[in-house]
Length: 269
Ligand code: PGA
Image (cartoon, rainbow, N blue to C red; front, top):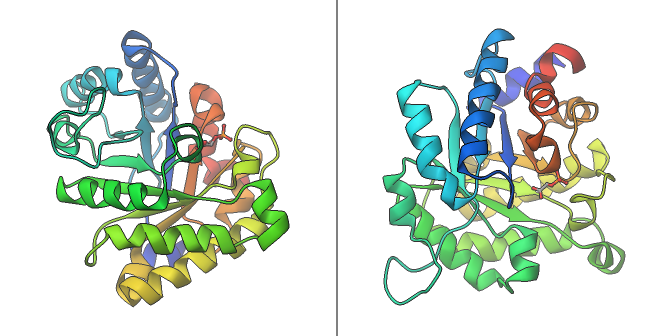
């Protein structure tokens, strides 16, 4: 399987393991968690150039995480879970991409299914948020995925492919983006997609990238799988040629489990 990995790396796609904390851990807990995670990975001799590690804490934790990462020069990357499509103004409760940039966020998750479902985020809103992220120098982690009903009605890749097409209307040129395929039925359910199911949809998503943004972008863009990823199933996903990492929810809140996912090469290859 080393060859699958070197093909990805050769294309410039460093595997990315990203922890989406959702609405968990306050800023004090975040400091303790990030410190422990960094120590744990350092003790294990983790090479961050081989597998990039990112965390996505709640907004209120970001300043604390920024300070910690800067003060201790931690090799961890971080981002936000959402942003506003607008830059500033009368948008009570919203957070501008400009603010996230100032907090040295690298990434921002956009279009997570929980936002699409609970906050009625349409494909148009997702595209506008992606444009806002890029405008402020943030790398959007664009989430797409089908529900169980979609799967039954339209098959495995129709909905994620359509969502990505719409989302890419927010991307004008060869920008730095990440795509995350997260089947809604697999999120938090303990029932992950199989590696082959994930590969098939991730390959279809890469084909959309090729068609809309060209070969260069398609080759270098990381496409992640998300949905009930654990230490015991990550290896199967990472062996697939079109899966470049994982967006991890529940398991990213357990330091040993998350470290095990990050260190998949040591136990699963
Ligand atoms: P899960 O969540 O790993 O808990 O299934 C994934 C996600 O929502 O990003």
